[in-house]
Length: 208
Image (cartoon, rainbow, N blue to C red; front, side):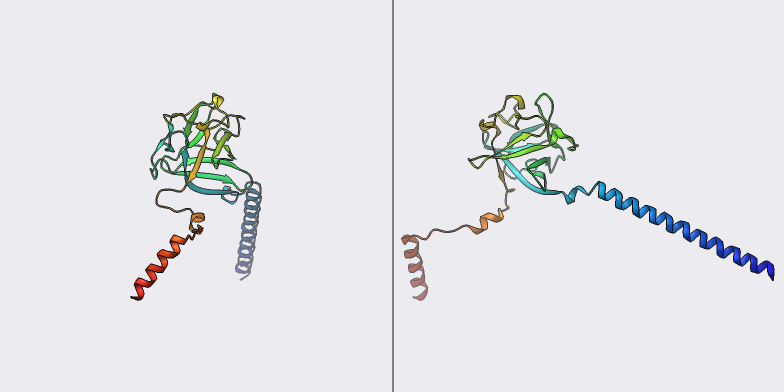
């Protein structure tokens, strides 16, 4: 009987010790989780992701990311012209990725525009500059004064040969084909004498 009693007591102590160790491990894991997410918050909590097209002023076409190669000869609504633009919540720093190719627009130290699958480097970050003519320019965040630009044939232009005043670096944001910009839904219609007369004639025709 004494043997059974001591055996039962030993088992209880072993179970208590096991539960204590597990609770300590869970607590440590929880602290690690909190510290890790505090130091490195989720990127999505700091970014805004938008999808649109970049219309080139020089070619009359859209910027398209084919992979490593990038040009400004994309058609409106073309699958390679759809761009995923990751914008920091504070500021105008953006990373531009092709929706289809999943490559980012980057600029190397020679000013060459290339597509890369990893856009975390500073070479793949551009700063939006809003111009007076309603166009947007994209200047490299790493290489000051070097802009994203394309010549009349749609070929990338070296960043070292660009300035903000050149039409080659001017772009306009456009919604994908078939989608309406929410701001365009609130257009005002100018009512003229001709419009009023047409409405009266239409109303009289319905009565008759």
